[in-house]
Every structure is written in structure tokens, then in C-alpha cells.
Length: 283
Image (cartoon, rainbow, N blue to C red):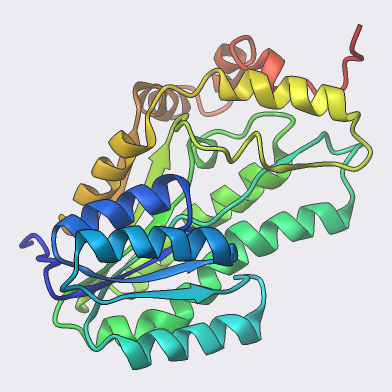
């Protein structure tokens, strides 16, 4: 399968205002791609767009401020993107959030909120832009899943549910589009140094100090820089790969689950103990 050439073609990126989304956008701008940047943070999004326009003065960079959980807003954004970009080649979904708490601490509303953001936001934008991707001679969709779409730790039920669902959506969509011009891939990062865990949400019933302790412990396990992850994600997209791991831990967890489908948690429990503990009191 030939590598995609992004110069003069458009990539749409969700979660483009920060983290891996912004890093990927910078790499694409340097290669002469046109960009449709999607995020709900209008100020940060416009700041990134201004930087990219200075890097790639001949590229078209548009911004689309939208809450991906809002069906009507997503539909309007997709219409806007398709109107402003005639050659949509790739979609990379980086938008997402986290939610700390055990099943006893979480409410249904909190869990539904995270599913709306991580899963339905991904499905929504993909469905909305798929007609434009089909109109391209060759196109690819990249969804960011997670190491927690390979193995589901305690204390991360909503996040794991959402990412397992993103994995399932990506695989089913890949099979559904097999033989067409659109290919689909999923990325499984392990510990990229973004603000997702420190700026994510936690159950209202959870002591903020305990939530901070768990989030900090999780963040300390992250060892991949966003720029490194962005390079891997972009290469996977341009080479239209179906399955891509980021970080040694992702490969390790993938192997553990394959070898020990039930007992893999016995190997993971110890290293993740502090990051998944949302019940032990402080003090």
C-alpha cells in the first residue's frame, strides 16, 4: 500500500489545541498539508493555528470550535470543513478525557459523560467526515485508543470502557470499509506526557486529594514525549497501518494479555497500585 503524500491534501485533527493533536499538526504543517483543526478550546486552538500558518504560509489552516458530544455542532463543523477543504485525505482523532473513581464512587452521569467524549465524539466526527474521505482517491482514519484498550485496570472503568469501545469501533469500521479507498487504524499509546490525567475529571464522590494522588502516580509512569508519539502516529497514518503501539509498555501489556488472557492483571496490579487507588484515605 503506497504511503500517503500529505502535501496539498487535508488532514482533520480532533483535540488539536494541545498535546499530541497539536504536535501532529505541527509535523503536518512542515510537510505542506492543509489542516482542519478541531477542539472546544477556542483560544488555544486559534493560537496553534496562528503558529501553523506562520510555518506553512501556503497551506490552508482552518479552526473549528466544537464540543464533539454535541451532534448538531459536529454536523455543522463537518459541513464547514468539507466546504473549506476540497481534498480531505486523513482524519486523526486525538480528543479525549479521563475519569478517576471506583464503581462505588462513580455515577451513571459521570460515566456517560466520558463515553460521550471519548467514544461518541470519535464516532460522531468519523461518521460526519466519512463522505469526504470516500471522495478522496486514497484516505485513512486514525483513532487514538490506549494501552487501556488492551487491558482494563481497576479504578479506570469509564476510561477503559470508552477506549475498548473505540478499539471495537475502529476494527469494525476497518472491516466494513475493506476494499474501499478508506483504511482505518488504531493507536495504542502507553504513557504519553500530556495533561490528560492531571487535567481530567474525577468522581464527585472522590476526595480531591486522593484523586490528585492517583493522577500524579499515573502521570509519573508516562515516559513518552508528545513529539515522539506524534511522529509515530503520523507515520502510522501515512503508511495506513491498522494497529500501532507506542512505548515499550504497550508492547509488554499486549503480550501479557495474549499470553495470560485472565491472569495478566496479577502482573499489572503491583506497578499500577498507586495509580489505581482511589479509596485509601490520605494520612
